[in-house]
Structure formats: C-alpha cells, structure tokens
Image 1 (cartoon, rainbow over the protein chains, first blue to last red):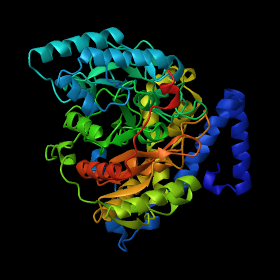
Image 2 (image 1 turned 45 degrees about the vertical axis):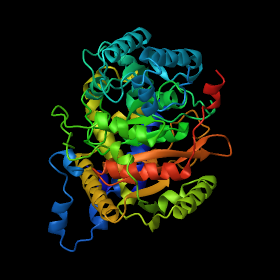
Image 3 (image 1 turned 180 degrees about the vertical axis):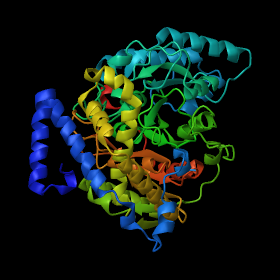
Length: 78
Length: 456
C-alpha cells in the first residue's frame, strides 16, 4: 500500500482526478464543485499552517508550550 | 409626530421617558415603516406585530406608574433569527428549523427585554449564519449585496425600521453588513456577552454583536448586554468594567491610532484608499497621534487558522442533523461541513496554536496604542448578489477574540456607504468605544435614509 506522501505529483493529481470523477458522479457537478473548492481551500490552509515558521524563540521546547492551545477556548482571549 | 426613522436609541428612550412620545406610538411607527418597505427589502423573517404592540402598551402602563424598566424602556429592536426568542419562531435561515419555536429567550434577548426594549420580530440571517447569500436587499442599491450573515439586522437599522438590532459574528457577520449598509456595527470582546440561546456556528469564534446608528448607542447596548453567564462556557466576568456609555460623556482625549498597512492596504480599492488618506489627514488635524502599524508575520496565517477552526467546529455542530438531512443544506454550508469532517485533528490543533501566536503579536502592538484603524471593507458593497462579501478584513480580529467596531464615514462615487473599522485591545471595549466616538465626532458624518427606504 502506498501512502499519500509516497506518491509523485503526477500520481497525486491522478488520484485527485479519480476522486473528482466519483464525486461528480455521486453528487452532481454543482455540489461536487462546491465541495472540491472548499476542500482545496482547506488543504491549502492546512499546508500553510506551521506555527514554528514564525517562532521567535530559539528554544523549541519553551515555544511549543507557549503556543499550545488552552484547555478552554476562552483562555485564548482572557 | 417626530419622524423616528433616523432617531437613535438614546433619543428614542429619552422621548419616551419624557412622555413626548409613548412606547406604543414609537413601536407602531416602526411597524408601519416595516410594513411599507419590507415587501421590497426583505429584512425581516417574522414581524410580531401583536406581541410588540402588547409589550409597548405594557411599557406605557409601567411608565404611567412612574417606573422605568431600564435604559431601553420602549425602544423597538430587531433580533437576528439565529437567536432564540420564547414563543417566536427561530428558523436559523434553514428549512430544517422552519417550525422551531423556542420555549425561552436567549440570554441577550432576556437582557434586552429586562432593560425595557421591545422585540419587533426576527431579522433575516443567511442559512445557519454561514455564507450562502440571503434574500434581503441592500437598501442603497438592490444590485449590491447587503452583506451577511446578519443581513436583516443591518438593513433594518439602515432603513429606519428600528434603531438597534442584534447580530452575531464568526468572521465579519456584524461589521461587514453594517459597513455595507451605512450603520454602526459593534462586536465586543469574545466572552463578554453570553451566547446562551444563540445557535452556534463555531464555539470558539462566535460573538454576539449589534447594529446601531451611533457609537453611543452601541455603548448603551453594551451596558445592557455584557455580563457573566455560567451557562455559556466562554463567558467571562466583566464586573470590573465601568459604564460603557457613561465613559463617552467624559472629555475624550485624542486616541493613539495605528494605521494598518501592508496586506489590508493592498487589497483595498483605490477609492477606499483615497478616502482613508483624507480621513487620516482629518484625524491628524484633530491632534491625535497616528502611526503606521506593520502587521506581524502570524497575520499571514491567521485566516488559514480561522478557516480550519471554523470548518471543524461547524462540522461538529451539525454532525447529527447533517447526517440525517444533507439535502436540506445550501451548497456553501454543505461544503463547509463536509470539509470540516475531513480535516485532521492535528490541523485543528495547529490552527489553535497559530491563533494564540497571532493574539500575542497583536497584544504586543496594542499595548502602545488605543486601537488599530483600517477601512471597514475593501470598498463599498460589491455589485454581486451571489456573495455576502469578503470576510478577510474581519476574520483575523474575530479569531483573536478582539473587539471591533465600524463607523460609517461617507458615501462612495457609486452611491454606496463606506466607513472605517477600529479594532481594540481585548477586554478594553470601553477604550475602543471611546476611540470610535472620537473618530465619529471628528468625521461628523450624518447618515441618511437609503433610497429604497426613503422612497416608501
């Protein structure tokens, strides 16, 4: 079995095209397109997210704790 | 009788308290205006004429006995149809909840009523306060979007139906429609106003906000609506805050404002940039201290973080109902939910980390200034009814939980409202309101009734 990380760019594109064909078949063009656009935006967003990219701290162990999500969301803004 | 179409909350309440007008007269005038204009504008999902008149008569009787319920005694208001109202249908803009009649008021509705306000009915929300466009028209030009998701609330206030209306904001759903329709929109710090009884979009982003005609009115509503609610897990105690409206009556020194440059500047229309330039010059003459503020690197990622957090939490909110009735959701809502279900848990945690970093960066910048100032939107409301507009001017600040306010400052060349947005320090909503009041006073823009509301 191959994992997504093992695929070449071409193989990934082929896999995506096959998924899209199945989505259009199952959902129709309009819904498949809406979901595809949404998924594309989200996957792009996920790819860009990396808090360490703008770390200002040379000590990763400290940094990783400082930016950890709080137990409760409201702690983010307290 | 005084034409109440453009009268503020404060003035309306005063006219009633001074017995120059009765609550029944005020409410009847509002209902009549809705009746004349709303077939066209479609700001209201439901108008509770009988309930509003009954409540107005009771308010008059109370006043006749010498009692005043609160600062909103007799003032008519609109409630976004995603906020529960006892005995009044609350459909969330969805056919799934077309018959939903809550048995109790949301905390914010209870607080409004407790302060004497009279709910005229429910204002149109886009489906589940997400992003599929509403049926509501922009009263300045029907070919332009009214914005969303609190579309009906913004149009109702702009069109003189009521001087205040509740909305909710997960990205820009209060500030954007307020800007597109030429009214003041205020989103408090996350956690200061209870969301109990408000249908969620995203638990860690949702904030109740409101539209009014003036900054002072926004502060009056903040006085009424803020406060700890143990039934909202995000609620925080704001007892240490002074009276928000009272602080606006003091002499307000020129605030220190940071002009946001970079990304926001680049995506703003030329006309809006010119308007901002003139405005900043005007504010400088007022003696305030303005500096350019370069956004931190984390700003570049905060919208991505918001998209991930919002999609995942929305998918969880709708998990059960969506599994049963996927066909009853609009295309944008459906796509968002299905995407949220597929995003990995690690992405959600990473997004929360980026959010924390951004908040820290902005807190650092705001420590040396009172508020950030920027256009309230890239330009006037777009001439496109397939969208509710671009949320990117608002989602960073909402994601950081910061308070924000939009103030109308003029009319564009194509006859549409434009304005500025100010973003303040977390939990310093009083400071933000003071800065906004200072700007409002210096600019001196007097909103008019929009053409589609004035001609009826």
